[in-house]
Image (cartoon, rainbow, N blue to C red; front, top):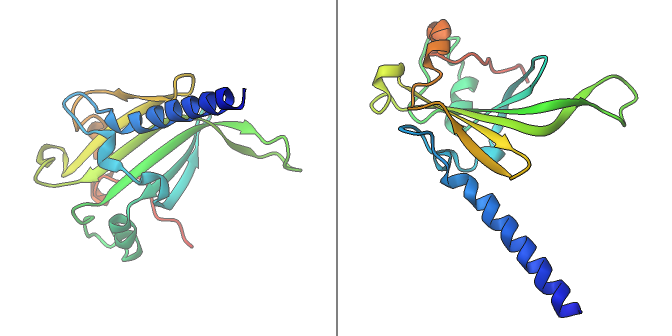
Length: 171
C-alpha cells in the first residue's frame, strides 16, 4: 500500500511539474513566447492598480527597475533596450480574515508583457507586446491576440512616457 501511495504521489507531482513547465511553451501567434519572460515571477514591483474586475501588479526586470530609479521616463529619456515590464492580474475577493474591508488576489486571470527591443519592434515604438490568459481549471496559459504589436494602439496615448502607463511609485 505504501508503494502504491508513493507511486500515486510521484505521478501527481510529475504531472504537476509537466503542467507548470508547459507554461513556457506557449507563444502568441506571430508574436512573443512566454519563455521570453522566464523569471518574471521574481521581478521587483513597479506599482499596483485595481479595476472593478481585476487586481493588477506591475513588475519589471532589473534593467527597467534601474531605469525607473534613474528617473526614466519622467526625465524625458527612453527606457533602455532590454527593459521589460509584466502586468499580473488576479480576480479580487474580499478578505475573510482582515478586520477591515480589503480586496486580495485570488484566481490568476492574465499575464501581460511589454519588452523593449527597438530593432525587433521598430514598427511599434520599439516595444513588443504579449498577453496570456490563465485557465485555473487546466493550469494552462492561452495566448491572446496575434503578433508583437497587439497592445501598441492603446499605448500610443502615453508615447511621451515611452509608451509605458505605469509610474514607479515612491518608496
